Image (tube, rainbow, N blue to C red):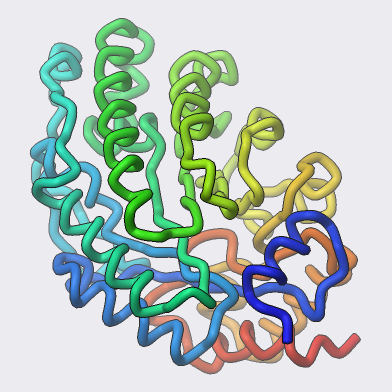
Length: 331
């Protein structure tokens, strides 16, 4: 019987597998404020659907809380939380950020959650921890509009803040290596032509991304890049990033899977829109879209998933359809 690790490693290498790997992930609002509860919900979701890997999904603010950001969940169906206190209100505030200690506060809580999840999964199920890029964290700390303004009017101050955030991430990754995860899910934001120019991302995004990705633990064999955004992503900027897989909004923003696969040497992950059909459609529509994706990729170097986090209220029949289609794979 093919193990999940073997299936994923063969997929990354472009080799034939017994079936295409599959996974969905979602947020756990409320539960994500306590390590034991986040672990319990994540493990229950895995026990129910038996995904080929577990993407650990803390609240998107777990890396920001210790900088002083405050937020609350008010019912967003993606499970994301709304900010009630922003950290960066003027460009000078970037210079006030301090490197975080991963043994304290929200970061320590997340390390404990990751440890519990890995322990609960056992050696047969790979887990990858969500890491938000420095520029993604900066966007949350300041808000998108203010961040863009500061990039264009006070670039050195922004660089100071990005260096502090990057150092905090690197310290967290050092501690994360002791939890037993198989790698990270590295989420980038702002790499979108609707927000920044390509040159701006090359200056304020890429150097910090590569500092992190090039420092990843050598034992981590499954690292996935997520290019967030459903408008005009800068997909080609990431083709040489040292990761094994890439996930993006292929159904909502492009490029399509076949194009993405022709450009990227590792595995492409997606094929399903997290909104339509997985949230608003029917199981039949989910299966139809999944089979289109299987055909587009020739069932090689492909992981079936949504292009972004699944909604917390998506019909369970649709979630089951995602899992079942790779077993059936009727063409």
